[in-house]
Length: 380
View 1: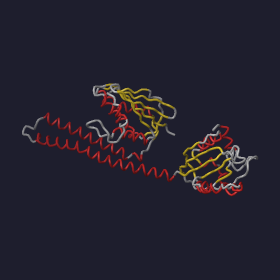
View 2: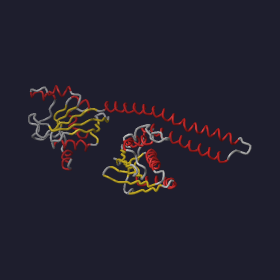
View 3: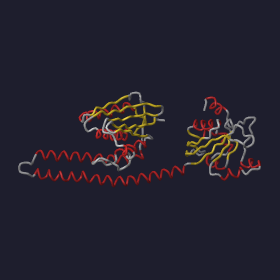
């Protein structure tokens, strides 16, 4: 809404009526037109308000009073637009309605008792009903129960998925445990030899045990990351500095594998809201994928880009690429094309990003490389 419009809305208290505007209309007064409009409005489950061009409420059906906790007189004394958070959202919707553009949105309504509830809002100009020039209608729908049911469904789906993942993880744990038991038996036999055993075999067994323990640790961490997503607490983080720290930690490990790590265009990215440890898991999983795609070495590039109210991060490798038929399945839980894979890495990355209100997309070309694009919102 333009600054002048907002000032007019704020400077004209809703208790003062325009000279050319009729006074407040109750449902019974509307009935005097001879049409059963009041009965219709009273039977609706949605709250319906009719506003004048200056924002004064002139009709207010019972569901609107019940939903907000205000009578029509009280609402005009308080100011209708002040019931919503943020108030600019409703002002913008009203302005679009004045311009003849019906629009829907979801905002937060602050009831008379202080309770905050989500509501769906629809604004549209009022036409063809007597002398209503310049008026518009605001329809309010309580979304509390709908969102509660939606959250219950999501929780049920998450618990179901965690149950499936628990079964998959327990299955995956058996393989490294079997290897550890086997190597432990070999170690025991070697150490009981009179000459102390074969040093090469002992070293080999210890290396295998160490690798399998690391694999078990990674499995457990990925599963725990999924289980904790519901309580993810995000804090503003300087994204460029965060990426610098991550790359410094990874650089030596990658160079040993013949992979050159490049960080580009990150210094002016500003702040994003992150749960630092969980987001690090996203980066680790994507980097691990890139490393596995470049067994003979290559280049791994992390490139940032600031775009309006979002921050983009490209993670691009020069590896073997991904077959087109596999792209659609990449983020499916328990799906993997690797003999030693669990199918959790990319699925977990997507779920963590979703908990950050962020998106992930992928493009790939066989024998050229793969690029993952992460889109993160700036803190509000």
